[in-house]
Image 1: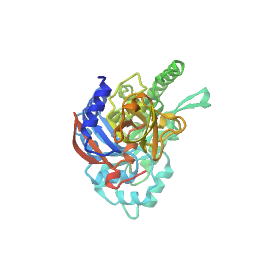
Image 2: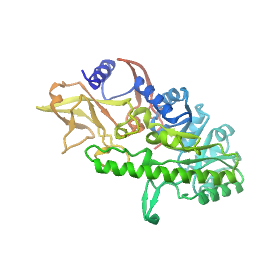
Image 3: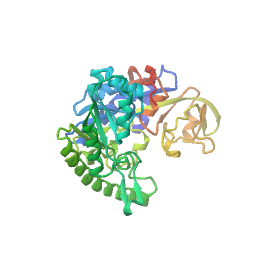
Image 4: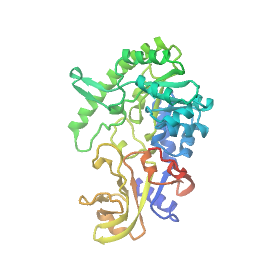
Length: 400
């Protein structure tokens, strides 16, 4: 029996009394992945990206382990909810225009002390001030650096279009603007190199492209390391008491942590290890989060139909954004139908061994987005479900 077949047997036994659709997290795999992130961080704390987990119980489980410290959140409403729930160090990774949220933040000393907001434009500071509604608490601010690699005089740009702040001078100028403005305090710098941390460097069947990605990422790491160090020096000249410099992501933890200028790294997807993280040469994780759909039809030889399963991930639309049939091994989508809203035909010889009511296990393309489809995660240890915990959705929280 292969390791994957053994996992399927365990998951089927663990969930035998549960009807599909059902979502699980394999705690042995989750904990092993957490240990690997800490090992790769090389002694620097790992800030946990909540959007990649979206379950408070599992956020707490990871943060209870040595090597993890703090949350990186994705909306202001989520940040305030987490802070009220007892999370004391929440860094909002994206600028917000949530005026109601800012009114709450600036009116509550506990929230203002726990939550740090992201800015990359003076206009965002003005929006916060307009939203204060009498709230006088000092707002903790993190400045975001643009990490894109620019080639040929800027005519070629590699990386996500995030912050407009690319140069040390630009980041330092914004730091000065924050310092001059009453009611704000610069406490950190963040730089997320998504073109390194979130792009696999080995593409199956495409060796030339894989080589090109590795060359691009090596060049990007060198350029960013030099520029990030210069940015930190420039900002510390304005704000000597800077508390943290955050960088990285699951795919670049060990590289980013090796930079002297970086004080902490961010990661989250590496706990669940969705399918988009199969294509890395720098690390290998264990799939920990899966969902099962039930077989409801057997249309013919070599084909079964499962209920639903059309859970595409965000990003540019493509086959790589679809969940992948994982267990039993050897199933594939019908190219004419793909993953359907209500029914999904699956092709392959393993279909002939599946009966009505059997489970087919899938891996989502991305990490936390699976939790937007399920209100409960069943936690598996060995071949038993030992707990059932709510996702954000299960707690009635759908932030995006």
